[in-house]
Length: 96
Image (cartoon, rainbow, N blue to C red; front, top):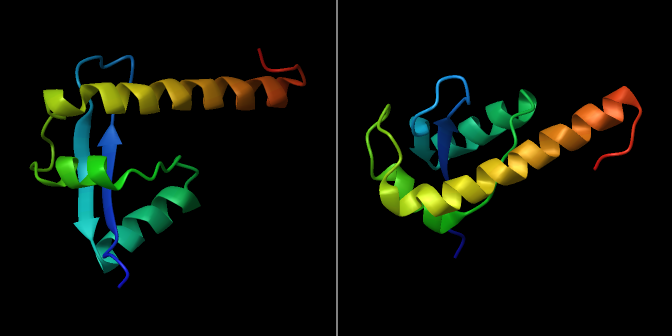
């Protein structure tokens, strides 16, 4: 049996600081729509069902719980590396 899709979107910017916040969440068709919109707008998507299930328990606009800090920090590091690689490619230089 296939599991129902689940998606949670987070927002965090270095300029704002603070803790990432939950900006969207859903299951089933709503999760598929969230994922589709993210991909269509070039937002990186990370599949981590356990983390998504944990985050989905919290209200929209809520900061991520402390139990999720390590996992979310790992994702942010990955995204910053990806951004640096893409910027280097656009500038025509090798990524470091």
